[in-house]
Every structure is written in structure tokens, then in C-alpha cells.
Amino acid sequence: MKAGVASPNGVVVRDIPQAKINKPTDILVKVKAIALNRADLGAAKGDTSHGASAGGPIGSEYSGDVIEVGSGVRDFKPGDRVMCHSPGSHAEYAAGDYGRAMKIPDGMGYEQAATLPIGLNTLHNALITNGRMKRGEAVMVQGASSGVGIIGLQVAKIMGAGFGRVSERPDSLIDRDLADGLLTRDPRRAAKLAAE
Image (cartoon, rainbow, N blue to C red; front, side, top):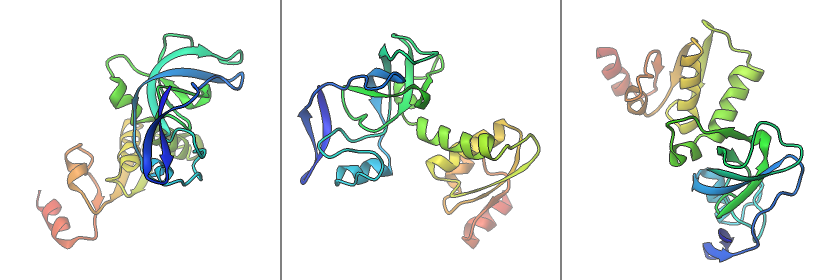
């Protein structure tokens, strides 16, 4: 299969052995779309701290179609459209634990779905699983205009939380109707928000 692999000259496309199921809980996915995030940029330079392997494909977020499932996989079958996060996604095929996969909702494309797994899992874990957030509770999201921050605001809003936001780029929040309670250190932006 073709894959984006880190090299001394940056990422190069190479032919490597096709990904396969290695554990009973793995699913094998024909990749349709990939995302690029900060950890992938490091992996492209040879940083293996986020699960990338030397000589293997970089990447961590992807979407596609399940083509095979391990014997211990529940709730997924060949043909399912999924979004996933696991090392080695910048390739034609990727394998990973089914616990890091989610079915793509009807009406959502592969490209959009590929950008969501890490942010959704991170914020769901922080706010719901560990944070035990309940409707009406307050949430403070720092770095609110980042990709993960915006997902956090959306999860909090859907769950009915009141929230404050800290952002140096409030325009990205205003455009998404997420600016209620916005805090910023920039006095010009603060005055502009107060006047609106």
C-alpha cells in the first residue's frame, strides 16, 4: 500500500506492507480521508512520542470504510463508515482498536469526520466521563478558539452548561455562535465584544 512515511527529508510517499489486524480488538479500515494535526507535524520530523513508528506511516486521525474486524470487536462490521484515531493513518489502509473508532453519522462526509476523533474523545473524556458535567454547571474552556477548544464549547453547549471562554482569537468563536461569556486579554477586542 502507499503511505506517507517520515524521512530525513520530510514526509515521502512509499510502498509499504498493507496494514493488518494484529489484535482481536482491531478493525481494518480502507482510508478515505485523513486529518493533519500538531502531533502529525512532529511525526513528519521523526518524533515518535505520539505512537508513530520509524519507517511506518505517520498520522493519527482518519475516516473510511471497515473492511475487516477482529474476533473481539463488537458493534462494527465490514462496510461501516467510521472515524478513528490510531497511529499510522496516512496510508491507504489503517488498523486500530475499535474502542478508538466511532460510526460516522448519516449526512457527514469522510473529510469532516476525519477531523473529529481526537478532539471529540479528548473533550468527552474531560467534560463528561471524568468531569461528570451536568446540565447547568459552569465550564471554563481555555484556548477556546483552538480546534479542541471549539469542540469543548460545542459539547458544553449541547449538554446545557454555562461557560466562560478564554481566547486570543474571539472572531472564530463569534462566527460559530459560541461567544457568550467570552474573556480575552486584548482590550480592543474586549471593547468590541462589549459594544456588540
